[in-house]
Image 1 (cartoon, rainbow, N blue to C red):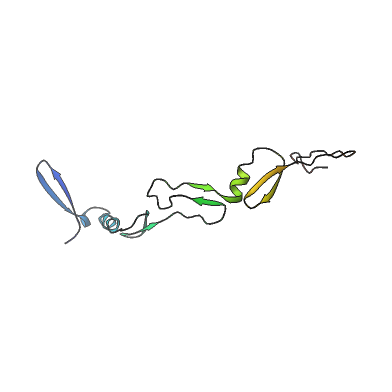
Image 2 (image 1 turned 90 degrees about the vertical axis):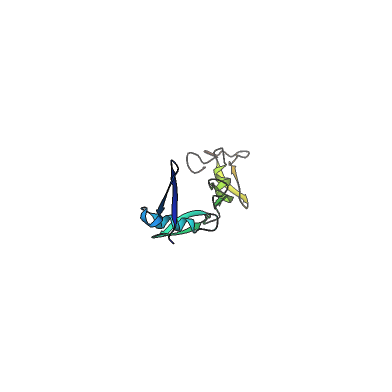
Length: 123
């Protein structure tokens, strides 16, 4: 027997065959999903679950299957460390996923113009 949808209207039961509903095949396809994840229509009346994943080291995804809510995508590793810099200067990478800002200080008898490199190359 075809999938059906029951609608109760004032003590009367109306049975509608899913194939008679526009998109009824899609309803059956969705109903056939048996695992958690984001539903993706892959063809006529065909559905699969998907998960959001990060494609590189600069991104991270939490809750990729969406079960606990929206899957947040955020910067990770070096990208997050560079984004977190809050001042001007020469960016340096002192360690893995760690970035800092440096300036070129002048020593005794030496002058440096634009030591933080903001206006151009330090001279």
